[in-house]
Length: 270
Image (cartoon, rainbow, N blue to C red):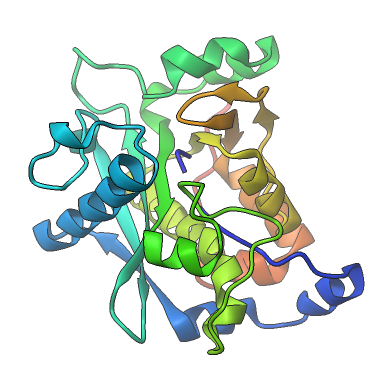
């Protein structure tokens, strides 16, 4: 993912106790997952991205976006989602799923050229053997400046840290660590709707550690490299990842799949 979230650093016994909490209820009491299908919602996505990628951490030149909306040539072959803060209606996080599309002039996904050759031969072989139309890249995952400030994480695009804290006294204090899971729920729903069976991503190491803590663990993870900050490339089969989550963390599985409503199709093995 280019890429979102935070979790407070807490004693191990408290972490174990949290497994029994209804994290779906906690998340949905504060946030809402929304697929950005209308022009207005897509504008919100681009505005959040502009703030994160052009102003807060200027990986992109703001002068290239006179309308204060960060977008690129991959957006037409992408689907987008938002996490919305229920009490205010504000969009607080965003992610896109980039698909191979029909543009023969741009057949590669954004991370392929810079990152895939740095991964293991086994990972490269797995990518090469997968139907191109079934692969999508998790990309432009970002948390808005307002929420990253509350998380004390204004130096990252995604607001990810194992020691981040949230200053709000409301129930959101407990829900904010789950923004990454909300974004993953959006990724899964978009994938199911578009027949995607495999995911690529480039993620901050802290985000990988956070997701692993929730049982979300990719099959192949490459070395740390410089790609819009220090990131690690990853590749996985969606259905096996979701099955592993169900075995390890059924509460997380329930949140991500909406109680089993969205399950990725099994890939065809030749």
